[in-house]
Length: 408
Image (cartoon, rainbow, N blue to C red):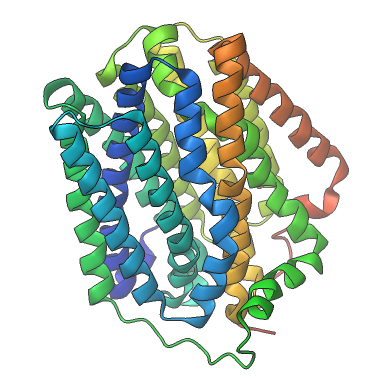
């Protein structure tokens, strides 16, 4: 199950990411709660998420081209340092009770730009740290560490919010970036192949041209796009769900999000243990369908433990969907194009999320939080059921051997 961690560089990278992601989740939970306390507005929760996520739509594809042409370590060191300084600024402003919603929205926007430039390099780096035979295991374990941090970070954030305040969560996030920065300085990264075409814009759209030639990849990319538009924005509304629908405070919000993280960890470890799964396309669609059903049920939840269970199921199924989609794309993409294709994946996953967050906040403000959650679940369910019925080819993805990463 843990064979990828026997590779020294990957294990160092894995540990650094775990601590950094735990800090990020702490900040996300604390920031959502702070916005709700300051403004009492579900719409502003959605607007903050929109501004943090919209850079993915603009910068992910250029970020992928940069990741394929420049030193990925240097790019990640720059973006991680920028995010660390922004977290420190947020912590200082909150400590001195000077932070306003305008400053929060600006910091979220700048953090989103750095994240969008960072993500393609981060994803494209993983296959460079393990042999091809361990790639699915490495991607699954990377998903496991992200979701372990999602289980631990919000729980710690809930406890810290109740005792030390939001600023403490922001300071802890600032420190957590050092773990990944140190890891990046320790690992060995193979040099990139020299690009024959020096024109940046041509290189950037090579990934788009490649995906356009692979219809099944286009359909595959719509799965995370649809989840991001109508399913995953439930995270933005969780402070409202916790306080107004379930009747728990900041600690309860942390525990609920920890439940989602726990389910996600279990799913990621199960995928890692199975190795190279067959029928990945079928599993992707099944997981997405179960997620949609769980979201509909969450919209009607009234008790803590029922909501906790549903969030655990949602965490497991969204990880199953995204991990298998990620793996399929990485295993079917030539190495020279990997950064750009992962940039497209990030655009599909995160580029729609800001619009989803904005619509979720607006619908919740106008029609109520339960209606907003239920609407997203129903539309997602209809779409994934249509894919289940009509797209046999996607369901067959993973049955045949995939071309080696790096093959033309």
